[in-house]
Image (tube, rainbow, N blue to C red; front, side, top):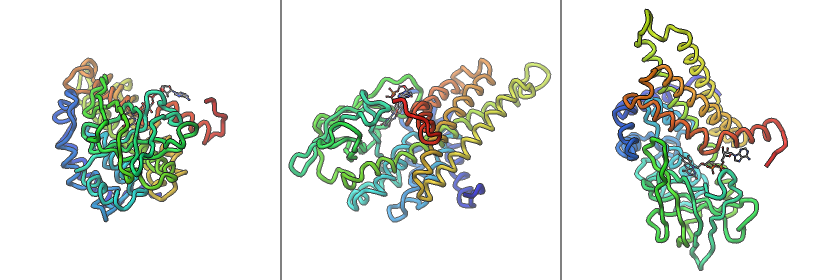
Length: 386
Ligand SMILES: Cc1cc2nc3c(=O)[nH]c(=O)nc-3n(C[C@H](O)[C@H](O)[C@H](O)COP(=O)(O)OP(=O)(O)OC[C@H]3O[C@@H](n4cnc5c(N)ncnc54)[C@H](O)[C@@H]3O)c2cc1C
């Protein structure tokens, strides 16, 4: 692993940051997020510039690079307050899984669109009665002649209104209960008996979450991704990119908050010197800087391991990176608000709104506690309590 980025990676950072600047938080993102309106113009332009599919194979119009580069894109966008939640889902999870395990026909149909952003695929695993315990999911696929009939509920599924399809994690009738033997299905959002209901969330976010009701949704045989027996591998292939991209978004948001705080601390003077001269303001910001940098190094380690093909090694690093990034970013937002005094709670800066959004990373895609469980069990060898 090199700590020095290539000229290409540095150029990508600069190009993405300049797009993010044009679609910045205060002028573009925040007004839309307050209305719960998707960032469609930004998504489309990022897609045309090749940023959204930078990790996907060149033969399907992607950039042929890795999760490292996609995380870099996400981090730089989020550092302008313009992170894209659906990047975590569409190119990172779904693009990776279909690229690695899809049939040729599935790749031909979906990959070019996922690569240039003209197609969006949401990802649905969470269920109301299963939550963090994916072994408990009950969405079931049963064969009906050549077709599949899919039945079940999903909750908190992001971006279904923008998506052409949802990659649904189900189980087949033969494995209706017990330890999860998943089967992954590409479910078009315009399928009959596919009902979505927008959730009433109390966060300021451009992308909405949905409850899904799948009431015997009929799917052709080729809706099943790859082979039924490889689905656990498929699911795992998507988890590391999901965590790395979640970390990237959190780190970017943390950088946004820190930059805003430093700018304000340098300008605002209520005694003789700018408030940034007081250690009570400067030290917490210095701590935030250190914690964001540490989280970023772990994220880059995870991405490098993942891109080198070491899924197992990447899992520990990706979990740790997502944990550290969420904590650092929430702290950054909180400290940025404190630095702004009363201004930190006004609509002008949108920092209080962003704190709510940063808080997502402590819960999703996997909660802080489940990461601590993972580390306790797998890294430390402690017994499992659940
Ligand atoms: C904004 C947002 C977007 C999301 N987008 C998607 C999406 O696109 N697709 C998707 O499938 N899901 C999505 N999710 C769902 C997300 O992945 C879940 O919310 C998350 O995995 C936690 O599940 P839960 O909400 O059911 O919490 P629960 O599993 O009910 O957990 C509740 C609390 O108990 C703790 N807990 C549970 N089990 C244990 C244990 N064994 N030990 C210690 N503590 C434990 C948890 O850490 C948590 O603090 C999204 C969620 C949010 C908030």
